[in-house]
Image 1 (cartoon, rainbow, N blue to C red):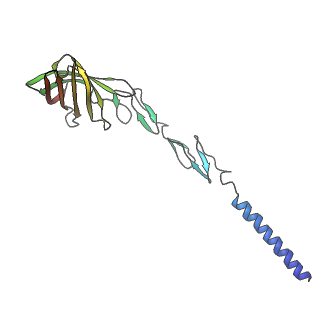
Image 2: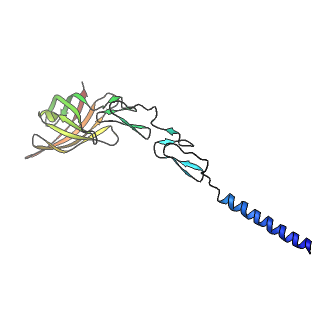
Image 3: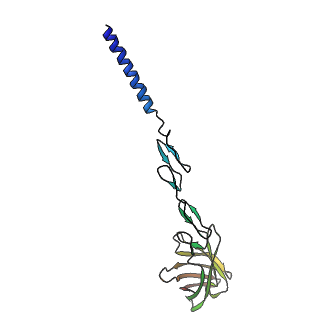
Length: 196
């Protein structure tokens, strides 16, 4: 009887000890000894990093050591350039800016000078002077791809103008097509603007 009691007590003790060990193992704080840096947080023993940070312990700031020129700012390891600049480190002047000799075909062939400057920082807008050899100007919005712009219904000399331009990476010229809406009709123009 004592042996049976001893076996029963031993079994209960072993079962109790096993339950305590299992309960403790299941409830172990996996993040207790995990240190996450740069705003990272621990989940199930692993660091979850905020945007712009990576690494096992979120130890690598993607903007650390990254230089953005001409007023550019590093966000998540990438330079966001101020208006008028581009390139991996904002080291290049925007390809559209400058003066051009325009060779346009409208009702007749025209050769004249065009100037392009940048307006605004948050939503870069181009101001194109002397479009259509008018001494007036129009505005353009740079496309999301960055290699073209759209003339979006602004007026020049009181008339509506709409069209687009595409930058040619081979020769640095801009190929354009636009329409000018006059009170008595619309004129279509196309041409090439050669950078000076």
